Amino acid sequence: MKVDVEGFEPYVFEGGKRLLREGHVENLFMENSVTDIERVGEMVDLLYSAGFRMKGIFTVNGDPYHEDWWHTFNPEFEKRHSGVIEPSDQMKFLAKVTCNIWWINSKYTKAQ
Image (cartoon, rainbow, N blue to C red; front, side):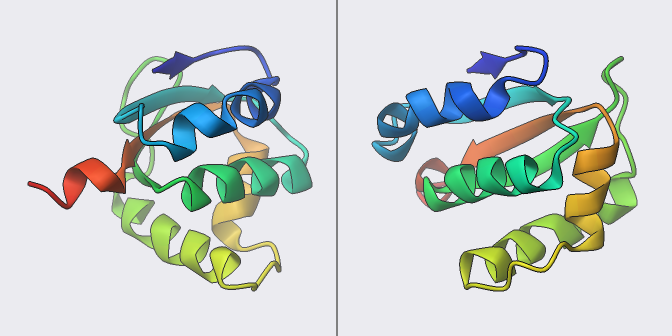
């Protein structure tokens, strides 16, 4: 699924929550241009709780963006999922830059 709706991504995911949670989407590629860190957090929380894990971050031109830092995002999302809501550097980054994020549904990766 590709989502590029100029800052309205949280609303798309909220509306498609059932589709996402039931595992009908294997890969999600989205442009994130949301700058409100609370909205970014809500969006990440919804995707993470639906089983999605971040696979990569790319510039709007498709080039890898801070690839050496990718491995730090999912552990931070897990902390949020466990109740630690303080804004991490990763969440601040996502609220600061416009980027493309590739998510993979963990329901599909476990079978591989």
